[in-house]
Length: 102
Image (tube, rainbow, N blue to C red; front, side):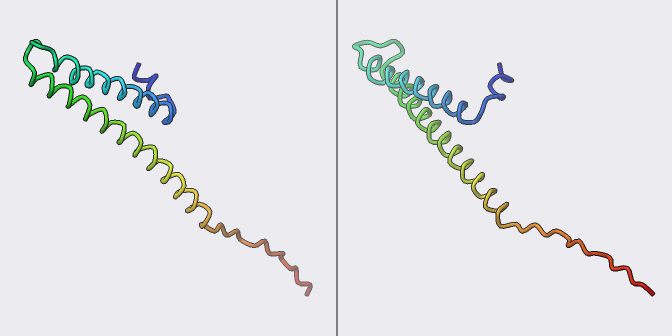
């Protein structure tokens, strides 16, 4: 499974990462707004509020980090391309050997 994930392109990995973050955000939202507002939730209100808030914050941070990674990767490619363009390739000139007739 890990080889399958590592062989993917970065944009596809980012898509799956954002999708996973959205699912985790949904779970956190469910904990925060539905389970924590129940009359007598198991383990109490505070635990569910903390779990829901933590899941939502972690998933939001995950989306931000994925988008930052993709943006930095584009900048890195662009910088590398500009550096390649500015680099001047100098070829040695072919000089004809003049044969001197003595």
